[in-house]
Image 1: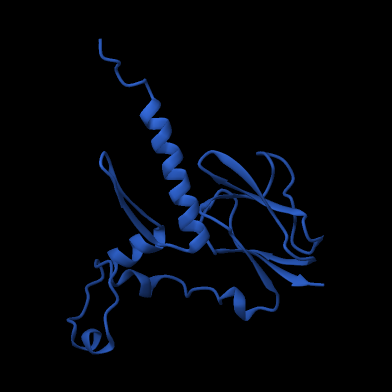
Image 2 (image 1 turned 60 degrees about the vertical axis):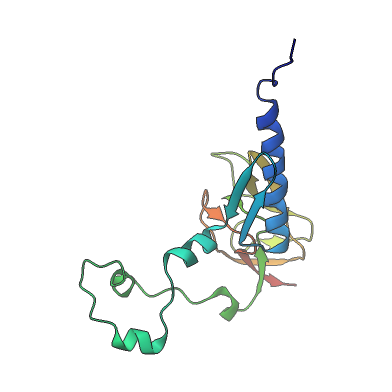
Amino acid sequence: MKAGPKKNGSSIGATAELEEYMKLMGRYGIAELEVESSNSRFALRTKEACATMAVAPMSAPAMASAPPVGPASPAAAPSKLAPAPAPAAAKKGKEVKSPFVGTFYRSPAPGKEPYVKVGQSVQAGQALCIIEAMKLMNEIEAEFGGKVIEVLVEDGQPVEFGEPLFLVDPS
């Protein structure tokens, strides 16, 4: 009698494998990864990689010769949006960045006080927030002490590897 495959055995292995690839992508700042083995093939892409693929930038000469865009066109939409906020790097302070891709949470649980607030002093090693990745809650700690100048991400918002989360005035 031949033994059949275990229920969920292959999906558990595949999930662990995907988690490892996602961690590596976050650790090394990889935007796209394609993996092929004898029994599977998959591609992982960050949001930035997908956005880059969807909207190819036009060179200045191509934009000058391009026909006018109508108001219903997606290319016209950005001009009607409010101007982008100034980059955090222009403000005084040091950025605390996301170490991986996930969902940002300011507090340890819904309805609880946030770990830190604007104007609060923080110590190196103090928990600043949680980033949920693959159903795992990861506390993000301050790498240096200082005063929180700004929280750059909304609670519950997805974040990417290297995305600034907080602006801190180092002490």
